[in-house]
Amino acid sequence: MERVLEQKFTIEYQYNVFFTKGLFSLGNNLFKNFLTDQSNPGFKQKILFVIDEGFMDAHSNLAEQIRNYFMESEDFILASEPLVIPGGEICKNDPTCLDNIIQAVDQYGIDRHSYIVGIGGGAILDLVGFAATISHRGIKHIRIPTTVLSQNDSGVGVKNSVNFKGKKNFLGTFAPPKAVFNDFEFLETLDERSWIAGVSEAIKVALIKDLSFYEWIENNAEKIKERNSSEMEDLIFRCADKHLEHIRNGDPFELGSSRPLDFGHWSAHKLEQMTDFEVLHGEAVSIGISIDVLYSYLIGNITREEAYRVVELMNKLGLPIYHPILDTEEARFILLSGLLDFQEHLGGKLTIVLLEKLGVGKDYHHLDYPLVLKTLDLLKNFCQDQNPVYEAS
Image (cartoon, one colour):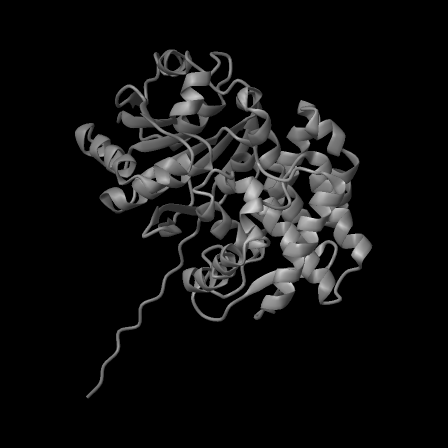
Protein backbone atom coordinates (compact mmCIF):
# COMPACT_ATOMS: atom_id res chain seq x y z
CA MET A 1 0.00 0.00 0.00
CA GLU A 2 1.46 3.33 -1.06
CA ARG A 3 1.41 6.28 1.32
CA VAL A 4 2.36 9.91 0.68
CA LEU A 5 3.13 12.76 3.05
CA GLU A 6 2.62 16.00 1.16
CA GLN A 7 4.88 18.89 2.13
CA LYS A 8 4.63 22.42 0.77
CA PHE A 9 5.69 25.80 2.09
CA THR A 10 6.60 29.22 0.79
CA ILE A 11 9.62 31.30 1.75
CA GLU A 12 9.46 35.05 1.22
CA TYR A 13 12.62 36.97 0.39
CA GLN A 14 12.97 40.69 0.86
CA TYR A 15 16.00 42.93 0.66
CA ASN A 16 16.56 46.60 -0.07
CA VAL A 17 19.20 48.27 -2.21
CA PHE A 18 20.24 51.52 -0.53
CA PHE A 19 21.93 54.39 -2.36
CA THR A 20 24.07 56.79 -0.36
CA LYS A 21 27.36 58.66 -0.08
CA GLY A 22 29.90 58.35 2.74
CA LEU A 23 28.47 55.09 4.09
CA PHE A 24 30.94 54.86 6.99
CA SER A 25 31.01 58.57 7.79
CA LEU A 26 30.16 59.17 11.43
CA GLY A 27 27.17 61.33 10.47
CA ASN A 28 25.68 58.68 8.19
CA ASN A 29 23.54 56.30 10.24
CA LEU A 30 22.03 54.36 7.33
CA PHE A 31 24.07 51.20 7.89
CA LYS A 32 23.79 51.37 11.69
CA ASN A 33 20.03 51.86 11.56
CA PHE A 34 19.61 48.88 9.27
CA LEU A 35 21.62 46.63 11.59
CA THR A 36 19.78 47.91 14.65
CA ASP A 37 16.42 47.17 13.04
CA GLN A 38 17.60 43.58 12.45
CA SER A 39 19.16 43.07 15.88
CA ASN A 40 18.15 40.89 18.81
CA PRO A 41 17.91 43.06 21.98
CA GLY A 42 20.54 42.21 24.58
CA PHE A 43 22.52 40.01 22.20
CA LYS A 44 25.58 41.38 20.41
CA GLN A 45 25.85 40.02 16.92
CA LYS A 46 29.20 39.68 15.19
CA ILE A 47 30.16 41.26 11.87
CA LEU A 48 32.98 39.99 9.68
CA PHE A 49 34.12 42.32 6.90
CA VAL A 50 35.77 40.85 3.80
CA ILE A 51 37.31 43.54 1.59
CA ASP A 52 38.72 43.63 -1.93
CA GLU A 53 42.48 44.14 -1.67
CA GLY A 54 42.65 46.61 -4.56
CA PHE A 55 39.86 48.68 -3.06
CA MET A 56 41.56 48.58 0.36
CA ASP A 57 44.77 49.89 -1.20
CA ALA A 58 42.87 52.82 -2.70
CA HIS A 59 41.09 53.50 0.62
CA SER A 60 43.87 52.99 3.15
CA ASN A 61 41.85 54.43 6.05
CA LEU A 62 38.81 52.22 5.48
CA ALA A 63 39.57 49.78 8.32
CA GLU A 64 39.93 52.69 10.74
CA GLN A 65 36.70 54.22 9.46
CA ILE A 66 34.85 50.96 10.06
CA ARG A 67 36.31 50.63 13.58
CA ASN A 68 35.27 54.17 14.46
CA TYR A 69 31.84 53.70 12.93
CA PHE A 70 31.08 50.73 15.20
CA MET A 71 32.94 51.96 18.26
CA GLU A 72 29.84 52.76 20.30
CA SER A 73 27.52 50.11 18.91
CA GLU A 74 25.44 48.34 21.54
CA ASP A 75 24.03 45.67 19.25
CA PHE A 76 26.98 44.63 17.09
CA ILE A 77 30.65 43.83 17.50
CA LEU A 78 33.37 43.58 14.90
CA ALA A 79 34.57 39.97 14.87
CA SER A 80 38.10 40.91 13.79
CA GLU A 81 40.08 43.24 11.62
CA PRO A 82 38.76 43.08 8.04
CA LEU A 83 39.82 40.06 6.04
CA VAL A 84 41.49 41.35 2.87
CA ILE A 85 41.23 39.18 -0.27
CA PRO A 86 42.63 39.77 -3.79
CA GLY A 87 39.87 41.12 -6.04
CA GLY A 88 38.89 40.34 -9.61
CA GLU A 89 38.50 36.84 -11.05
CA ILE A 90 41.63 35.78 -9.14
CA CYS A 91 39.56 35.34 -6.00
CA LYS A 92 37.00 33.16 -7.79
CA ASN A 93 39.70 31.00 -9.38
CA ASP A 94 41.91 30.51 -6.30
CA PRO A 95 40.45 28.04 -3.75
CA THR A 96 42.60 29.52 -0.97
CA CYS A 97 40.49 32.69 -1.06
CA LEU A 98 37.36 30.68 -0.26
CA ASP A 99 39.28 28.69 2.35
CA ASN A 100 40.46 31.90 4.06
CA ILE A 101 36.90 33.14 4.51
CA ILE A 102 35.69 29.80 5.85
CA GLN A 103 38.68 29.69 8.21
CA ALA A 104 37.74 33.15 9.51
CA VAL A 105 34.14 32.01 10.03
CA ASP A 106 35.44 29.14 12.14
CA GLN A 107 38.12 31.12 13.98
CA TYR A 108 35.90 34.03 14.99
CA GLY A 109 32.71 32.11 15.68
CA ILE A 110 30.61 33.63 12.91
CA ASP A 111 27.21 31.98 13.20
CA ARG A 112 23.76 32.34 11.66
CA HIS A 113 23.00 35.34 13.84
CA SER A 114 26.13 37.07 12.58
CA TYR A 115 26.81 38.91 9.32
CA ILE A 116 29.48 38.59 6.67
CA VAL A 117 29.85 41.87 4.80
CA GLY A 118 31.56 41.89 1.40
CA ILE A 119 33.10 45.13 0.15
CA GLY A 120 34.45 45.15 -3.40
CA GLY A 121 33.69 44.39 -7.02
CA GLY A 122 31.41 41.70 -8.35
CA ALA A 123 33.94 38.89 -8.02
CA ILE A 124 34.52 39.52 -4.32
CA LEU A 125 30.78 39.76 -3.72
CA ASP A 126 30.24 36.47 -5.58
CA LEU A 127 32.91 34.80 -3.45
CA VAL A 128 31.75 36.23 -0.13
CA GLY A 129 28.12 35.33 -0.82
CA PHE A 130 29.11 31.77 -1.70
CA ALA A 131 31.25 31.38 1.41
CA ALA A 132 28.44 32.76 3.56
CA THR A 133 25.76 30.49 2.15
CA ILE A 134 27.76 27.27 2.49
CA SER A 135 29.00 28.02 6.02
CA HIS A 136 26.70 26.76 8.76
CA ARG A 137 24.15 26.15 5.96
CA GLY A 138 23.70 29.86 5.56
CA ILE A 139 25.12 32.94 7.26
CA LYS A 140 23.50 36.29 6.53
CA HIS A 141 25.50 38.38 4.09
CA ILE A 142 25.47 42.04 3.10
CA ARG A 143 26.89 43.43 -0.13
CA ILE A 144 28.69 46.75 -0.49
CA PRO A 145 29.59 46.99 -4.21
CA THR A 146 32.43 49.30 -5.19
CA THR A 147 32.38 49.21 -9.00
CA VAL A 148 29.90 50.44 -11.58
CA LEU A 149 29.23 46.88 -12.74
CA SER A 150 28.60 45.52 -9.25
CA GLN A 151 26.46 48.48 -8.21
CA ASN A 152 24.20 48.30 -11.24
CA ASP A 153 24.17 44.56 -11.97
CA SER A 154 25.83 41.66 -10.17
CA GLY A 155 25.83 43.16 -6.69
CA VAL A 156 22.07 43.71 -6.55
CA GLY A 157 21.11 40.17 -7.57
CA VAL A 158 20.72 36.85 -5.79
CA LYS A 159 23.57 34.76 -7.25
CA ASN A 160 26.84 33.75 -5.58
CA SER A 161 29.62 31.67 -7.07
CA VAL A 162 33.23 30.67 -7.65
CA ASN A 163 34.87 29.27 -10.76
CA PHE A 164 35.75 25.57 -10.87
CA LYS A 165 37.15 23.06 -13.37
CA GLY A 166 38.01 25.96 -15.67
CA LYS A 167 34.35 26.99 -15.91
CA LYS A 168 32.95 30.31 -14.80
CA ASN A 169 30.48 30.15 -11.90
CA PHE A 170 30.51 26.33 -11.86
CA LEU A 171 29.98 26.25 -8.08
CA GLY A 172 27.39 28.59 -6.67
CA THR A 173 24.18 29.27 -4.80
CA PHE A 174 21.03 31.32 -5.12
CA ALA A 175 20.87 33.24 -1.84
CA PRO A 176 19.65 36.85 -1.64
CA PRO A 177 21.67 39.23 0.53
CA LYS A 178 20.07 40.81 3.57
CA ALA A 179 20.77 44.21 2.00
CA VAL A 180 22.88 46.02 -0.58
CA PHE A 181 24.51 49.39 0.08
CA ASN A 182 25.67 51.38 -2.95
CA ASP A 183 28.01 54.19 -1.94
CA PHE A 184 28.62 56.41 -4.98
CA GLU A 185 31.76 57.88 -3.38
CA PHE A 186 33.40 54.47 -3.67
CA LEU A 187 33.41 54.86 -7.46
CA GLU A 188 35.71 57.88 -7.39
CA THR A 189 38.90 55.80 -7.23
CA LEU A 190 38.00 53.51 -10.17
CA ASP A 191 40.38 53.50 -13.12
CA GLU A 192 39.05 54.42 -16.56
CA ARG A 193 38.53 50.82 -17.71
CA SER A 194 36.48 49.86 -14.67
CA TRP A 195 34.44 53.08 -14.82
CA ILE A 196 33.32 52.38 -18.39
CA ALA A 197 33.19 48.57 -18.31
CA GLY A 198 30.12 48.49 -16.09
CA VAL A 199 28.13 50.60 -18.54
CA SER A 200 27.83 47.57 -20.83
CA GLU A 201 25.43 45.93 -18.38
CA ALA A 202 23.19 49.01 -18.51
CA ILE A 203 23.22 48.88 -22.32
CA LYS A 204 22.36 45.18 -22.08
CA VAL A 205 19.30 45.58 -19.89
CA ALA A 206 18.14 48.67 -21.80
CA LEU A 207 18.34 46.88 -25.16
CA ILE A 208 16.14 43.99 -24.02
CA LYS A 209 13.76 45.83 -21.69
CA ASP A 210 13.61 49.62 -22.06
CA LEU A 211 14.21 51.55 -25.29
CA SER A 212 13.84 54.91 -23.52
CA PHE A 213 16.67 53.98 -21.15
CA TYR A 214 18.83 52.97 -24.10
CA GLU A 215 18.17 56.31 -25.79
CA TRP A 216 19.03 58.08 -22.53
CA ILE A 217 22.41 56.30 -22.49
CA GLU A 218 22.99 57.41 -26.09
CA ASN A 219 22.19 61.01 -25.22
CA ASN A 220 24.44 61.02 -22.17
CA ALA A 221 27.34 58.92 -23.48
CA GLU A 222 29.84 61.79 -23.53
CA LYS A 223 29.03 62.86 -19.97
CA ILE A 224 29.28 59.27 -18.73
CA LYS A 225 32.63 58.79 -20.43
CA GLU A 226 33.89 62.08 -19.00
CA ARG A 227 33.08 60.76 -15.50
CA ASN A 228 30.20 63.06 -14.78
CA SER A 229 29.04 61.63 -11.48
CA SER A 230 25.41 62.76 -11.75
CA GLU A 231 24.80 60.90 -15.00
CA MET A 232 26.61 57.81 -13.75
CA GLU A 233 24.53 57.78 -10.56
CA ASP A 234 21.35 57.96 -12.64
CA LEU A 235 22.58 55.16 -14.90
CA ILE A 236 23.38 52.91 -11.93
CA PHE A 237 20.02 53.57 -10.27
CA ARG A 238 18.01 52.92 -13.43
CA CYS A 239 20.00 49.82 -14.35
CA ALA A 240 19.73 48.37 -10.84
CA ASP A 241 15.99 49.05 -10.88
CA LYS A 242 15.59 47.10 -14.14
CA HIS A 243 17.55 44.16 -12.74
CA LEU A 244 15.52 44.08 -9.55
CA GLU A 245 12.31 44.29 -11.58
CA HIS A 246 13.34 41.22 -13.55
CA ILE A 247 14.30 39.29 -10.41
CA ARG A 248 11.05 40.27 -8.72
CA ASN A 249 8.72 39.50 -11.64
CA GLY A 250 10.66 36.86 -13.54
CA ASP A 251 12.51 33.69 -12.60
CA PRO A 252 14.86 34.71 -9.76
CA PHE A 253 16.32 31.24 -9.17
CA GLU A 254 16.48 30.36 -12.90
CA LEU A 255 14.25 27.30 -12.72
CA GLY A 256 13.29 27.71 -16.38
CA SER A 257 15.45 27.88 -19.49
CA SER A 258 15.22 31.59 -20.24
CA ARG A 259 17.81 34.03 -18.87
CA PRO A 260 17.12 37.47 -20.38
CA LEU A 261 19.72 39.17 -18.19
CA ASP A 262 22.40 37.04 -19.84
CA PHE A 263 21.95 38.77 -23.20
CA GLY A 264 25.44 38.94 -24.72
CA HIS A 265 26.88 36.61 -22.10
CA TRP A 266 27.23 33.25 -23.84
CA SER A 267 30.30 34.51 -25.69
CA ALA A 268 31.41 36.90 -22.95
CA HIS A 269 32.02 34.16 -20.40
CA LYS A 270 34.05 32.14 -22.88
CA LEU A 271 36.04 35.19 -24.01
CA GLU A 272 37.01 35.95 -20.42
CA GLN A 273 38.46 32.45 -20.10
CA MET A 274 40.20 32.63 -23.48
CA THR A 275 42.02 35.82 -22.46
CA ASP A 276 42.85 34.43 -19.01
CA PHE A 277 40.52 37.10 -17.60
CA GLU A 278 42.66 39.95 -18.90
CA VAL A 279 39.46 41.25 -20.47
CA LEU A 280 37.18 42.64 -17.77
CA HIS A 281 33.71 41.13 -17.49
CA GLY A 282 32.03 44.32 -18.65
CA GLU A 283 34.39 44.53 -21.64
CA ALA A 284 33.63 40.93 -22.58
CA VAL A 285 29.92 41.68 -22.29
CA SER A 286 30.24 44.66 -24.66
CA ILE A 287 31.84 42.34 -27.22
CA GLY A 288 29.14 39.73 -26.58
CA ILE A 289 26.40 42.31 -27.04
CA SER A 290 28.00 43.42 -30.31
CA ILE A 291 27.96 39.83 -31.55
CA ASP A 292 24.33 39.22 -30.60
CA VAL A 293 23.13 42.58 -31.92
CA LEU A 294 24.72 42.00 -35.33
CA TYR A 295 23.36 38.44 -35.34
CA SER A 296 19.90 39.90 -34.66
CA TYR A 297 20.41 42.06 -37.74
CA LEU A 298 21.56 39.15 -39.91
CA ILE A 299 18.42 37.15 -39.11
CA GLY A 300 16.26 40.14 -40.03
CA ASN A 301 15.00 41.28 -36.62
CA ILE A 302 16.55 44.75 -36.70
CA THR A 303 17.95 46.92 -39.46
CA ARG A 304 21.61 47.34 -40.29
CA GLU A 305 21.40 50.96 -39.14
CA GLU A 306 19.96 49.91 -35.77
CA ALA A 307 22.64 47.25 -35.28
CA TYR A 308 25.52 49.59 -36.04
CA ARG A 309 23.89 52.27 -33.91
CA VAL A 310 24.50 49.99 -30.90
CA VAL A 311 28.04 49.13 -31.97
CA GLU A 312 28.87 52.80 -32.48
CA LEU A 313 27.51 53.68 -29.03
CA MET A 314 29.86 51.24 -27.34
CA ASN A 315 32.73 52.47 -29.49
CA LYS A 316 31.89 56.05 -28.50
CA LEU A 317 31.98 55.09 -24.82
CA GLY A 318 35.35 53.38 -25.26
CA LEU A 319 34.05 49.85 -24.83
CA PRO A 320 35.67 47.10 -26.94
CA ILE A 321 33.51 45.45 -29.60
CA TYR A 322 36.06 42.88 -30.80
CA HIS A 323 39.25 41.22 -29.63
CA PRO A 324 42.14 40.12 -31.88
CA ILE A 325 42.30 36.77 -30.10
CA LEU A 326 39.28 35.94 -32.27
CA ASP A 327 41.21 36.33 -35.51
CA THR A 328 42.05 32.62 -35.89
CA GLU A 329 39.69 29.82 -36.87
CA GLU A 330 40.75 27.79 -33.84
CA ALA A 331 39.90 30.62 -31.45
CA ARG A 332 36.53 31.14 -33.09
CA PHE A 333 35.77 27.44 -32.70
CA ILE A 334 36.63 27.72 -28.99
CA LEU A 335 34.37 30.76 -28.69
CA LEU A 336 31.48 28.85 -30.26
CA SER A 337 31.97 26.10 -27.68
CA GLY A 338 30.73 28.70 -25.22
CA LEU A 339 27.23 27.86 -26.42
CA LEU A 340 27.63 24.34 -25.05
CA ASP A 341 29.00 25.66 -21.75
CA PHE A 342 26.08 28.07 -21.56
CA GLN A 343 23.56 25.28 -22.10
CA GLU A 344 25.30 22.96 -19.65
CA HIS A 345 25.36 25.62 -16.92
CA LEU A 346 21.62 26.20 -17.18
CA GLY A 347 20.53 22.74 -18.26
CA GLY A 348 17.59 21.91 -20.47
CA LYS A 349 17.14 23.51 -23.86
CA LEU A 350 19.71 25.99 -25.17
CA THR A 351 18.14 29.41 -24.78
CA ILE A 352 19.82 32.54 -26.08
CA VAL A 353 18.26 36.00 -25.89
CA LEU A 354 18.50 38.08 -29.06
CA LEU A 355 16.81 41.32 -30.06
CA GLU A 356 13.31 41.12 -31.49
CA LYS A 357 13.65 44.89 -31.85
CA LEU A 358 15.50 47.61 -29.97
CA GLY A 359 14.21 47.52 -26.40
CA VAL A 360 12.70 44.02 -26.65
CA GLY A 361 14.47 40.68 -26.22
CA LYS A 362 13.31 37.32 -27.54
CA ASP A 363 14.38 33.75 -26.75
CA TYR A 364 16.02 31.59 -29.42
CA HIS A 365 17.05 27.95 -29.12
CA HIS A 366 19.55 27.73 -31.93
CA LEU A 367 22.32 29.88 -33.39
CA ASP A 368 23.64 29.33 -36.91
CA TYR A 369 27.42 28.94 -36.63
CA PRO A 370 28.23 30.45 -40.06
CA LEU A 371 26.17 33.53 -39.14
CA VAL A 372 28.03 33.89 -35.85
CA LEU A 373 31.32 33.74 -37.77
CA LYS A 374 29.99 36.37 -40.14
CA THR A 375 29.21 38.70 -37.21
CA LEU A 376 32.81 38.34 -36.07
CA ASP A 377 34.03 39.33 -39.53
CA LEU A 378 31.70 42.34 -39.55
CA LEU A 379 32.97 43.48 -36.15
CA LYS A 380 36.60 43.03 -37.15
CA ASN A 381 36.02 45.06 -40.34
CA PHE A 382 34.24 47.76 -38.38
CA CYS A 383 37.22 48.02 -36.06
CA GLN A 384 39.64 48.32 -38.95
CA ASP A 385 37.50 50.89 -40.80
CA GLN A 386 36.50 53.08 -37.86
CA ASN A 387 39.56 52.61 -35.65
CA PRO A 388 37.57 52.12 -32.45
CA VAL A 389 38.71 50.34 -29.32
CA TYR A 390 40.12 47.21 -30.93
CA GLU A 391 41.55 45.52 -27.89
CA ALA A 392 41.05 46.09 -24.17
CA SER A 393 44.26 47.67 -23.01
